[in-house]
Amino acid sequence: MVGGERALSAPRIQKTIWSNFDLPLLCVTVLLILIGEVMIYSSYEASLPTVGQNLWENTVFRQGVFAAVGLVFHMGIAALDYHVLISLRRWLYVLVVGILFSTLAIGHISFGARSWVSVQAFLVQPAELCKVLMIIVLAGQLGQDPEALQGPIPFLLSALSVIVPVFLIYSQPDFGTALVVFATWVGMSFLAGVRWRHMLLLGIVGLIAAPLLWSRLEGYMRDRVVIFLSPDQDPSGASYNVTQALISIGSGGWWGKGLRHGTQSQLHFLRVRHTDFIFSVLAEELGFVGSLVVLGLFVFLILRLLRIAALARDGCGRLIAAGGATMLLTQAFINLGMNANLLPVTGLPLPLVSYGGSSLMTTLLALGLAQSVVMRHRSAQSTLL
Image (cartoon, rainbow, N blue to C red; front, side, top):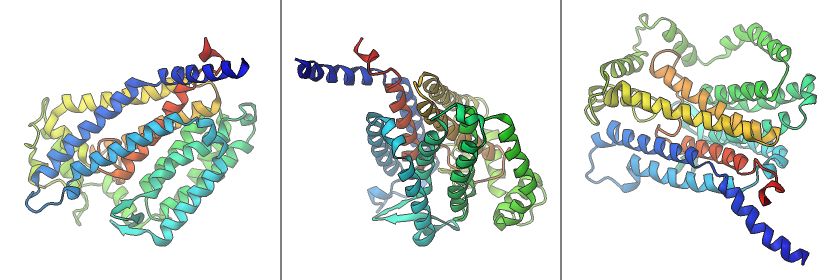
């Protein structure tokens, strides 16, 4: 009889778990992907010749395939109990370090960075996956014992853990992704309850080390900062694309010029318009109102992740959702800031919207982890009630 009761209980628990799936989060995610597909077509694919083009060369089609595969991973990671991943955090950290070392050794150089690995016909950016894996690792380190966080040891151990992947990603060099990983750790440490004086001490150390860090930056990275601070003194023309982005944003007006009617993108004045600077194209073609809608969708997405963090029934689940929110907020903030010339150019795509398979699937994995948390925010006993 006891075995029969267990057999009947398991389906009821599983059904109740899926009833906690955050459907609004998924709907907004898919909506942002669809907006990205439209903008990729309008900004880039529509202006290319179609004669003799292979279907796989079509960026809209490729992005759709990446989205479909990413959504499968999204559902798969949601179905997996996040506690299993937390228990494997040490192995996942070894995997992160191994992946990044391998990238430096055998990676494919593109745009001056050894950030890519060739897999069949695909170019994969392993550092993107490492962003999500580090969220799991840090959640396991910082979410286990809240009382232990009152001392400096857990914070220092997490700092040592994050320094290695940040350094390896920067060495590719990929300063933007390294910055996102570092900012995610800072946000997760704050939300975990690390004492202010420990974080303040880290900030003081960072300020002292700033001159050394500046001297170790790659030349083009320093140039981007100098150009950002003094855009008028740019004899090499390195600020050309930022200027074109500002023209795109400013010329959109309230309602925009309409899809495929943006002069800066359609006449190819704006470079990398379907990746790093896709928001400038969106602002020109959909205007202030369209831009505001997209920004509103991102705000909604981040608020849903923070809601999941508040609902989580343990510290690890709370930090997984909060880490995902911090990662998305940091990357979106940096991308929008460089489009509007409020931040130096870093080469980070706009999550879910910009073209790029590695970035898209990584974001969907992070959101799937958050779904795994909210689906299990009630204990197994309460799901039977």
